[in-house]
Image (tube, rainbow, N blue to C red; front, side):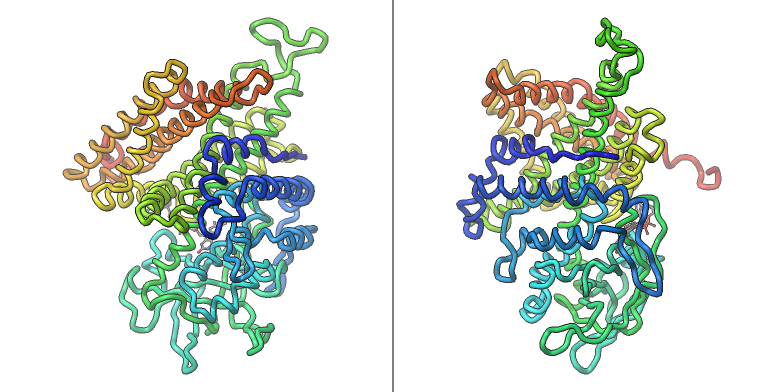
Length: 594
Ligand SMILES: Cc1cc2nc3c(=O)[nH]c(=O)nc-3n(C[C@H](O)[C@H](O)[C@H](O)COP(=O)(O)OP(=O)(O)OC[C@H]3O[C@@H](n4cnc5c(N)ncnc54)[C@H](O)[C@@H]3O)c2cc1C
């Protein structure tokens, strides 16, 4: 049985002491309610829900899974009741517009809520998590009628949403998709085709499901420029808005998969289902990206959720499990052996995990706060800069947090030895559950290619240069401070390495078309570690300011930051060398020789 205690102390540190999120946001129109007290109360309520309601059914949900019978899906025991509590608590519409029943709270706060929910129950959290994407897309692109019809029910949690992109022959390359949309006389469209791997495609948590579907109009150009976005409800609505007849969309089967077994993944058949265009014809992929960008940050958060859960359980086990003796002297002479936490290897796994998780959490809150600023700030320049930061950091948050999430789940399983591999302790579930986060919402290789191929060069490097100036401002602020030197020094070195490597990448790409994609994943990791070094420098700066004798939190924070700088950041040297090896080592072997 796993346990989960929401890391509220660290969350409050990030929210208040590191970034002063309430101070930065509550002065903005629309965020007047988002003061420090409200944010703390939200976090505390969410922690209770996660610890008392969502986490206790996490393991049973994995064991039971979802059951498909005659086109319907039954959720594991307790999920329906738990979801009702979640929806009744108003959690589905935390950031949604108050005009449609939402609470209008910041994304930065919502990130922390989603992190807790994901730690407590990754599968259950995906249902409302995806629905938030549907809400975001409809809010941005829907007609007034679509908004007033669907948003209140999605925001209250009475209905849920999906995103239907993938087809058997069209995954990363959505330009290949074939689902068709034929216009009807009444302004609606008939949608026909088969989508695969659709999360939450069919279930019994809600009476209706709102599918956002990518399909082609009859006159559509080939490729990704010919894709439109449609809203297709599972149950059609009567004129008065109540539920009417069943639409011609149904789950053909559900997938049997590695993890997240209580999150249903469906093959969805659209057989002339009635749908309505959302946004402009042929601009559906751009429209879907409104949803996907939100979901990419959400999925990055899922990686952090599982890492935190794995870390907490590994720490508890490492303090209990007695094996061997400490090399620097017996720690527990009254016991048959010392707890394994005395061993440097176990320490290393735990410190690695913690040093990454805390940096990722800080980065996720910072990036989501940039999203808030980009939506609500009165100064257009600040809005633009904040939007740039979200664009640049989205592939990093998504890919790095999920890659590390998987690594950390594995490292923490290792702390359990053989007991981690068997089911009882719940560690193997974490390794299985987190694995998909590296794949869906665009594989991490696709994220890395988005970073090197698009985001870096966008508008002559405006996003990248904007971020560099943020880090350089931090370095300038702490320059000359002896107490910061062991943090700012390595950050400065890593930043120079990143700059030089980026320049090399642009140069090499001129003569080698494979260069950027060959480097992409390693470059994303190099970039991520440098961003984490920046986060650690900021965290240590805040911790030094707050440090006092009675509260060890700040001293501990500095220890963890020191570990990151000495034991993790040096990976960037190796990554730099790997990237500069270019594409030849991987491309030289003839295809036939594989
Ligand atoms: C459990 C689960 C839930 C999902 N939920 C949803 C959902 O709700 N809605 C939805 O629409 N989809 C969903 N998906 C689909 C998911 O988004 C895709 O699986 C993913 O985008 C990858 O597509 P693919 O599986 O077809 O792999 P492919 O695109 O075939 O990729 C195979 C491999 O090739 C690599 N690759 C592909 N193209 C390139 C390239 N140009 N350059 C370099 N490498 C490349 C990929 O990184 C990957 O390693 C889900 C999938 C799963 C398994």
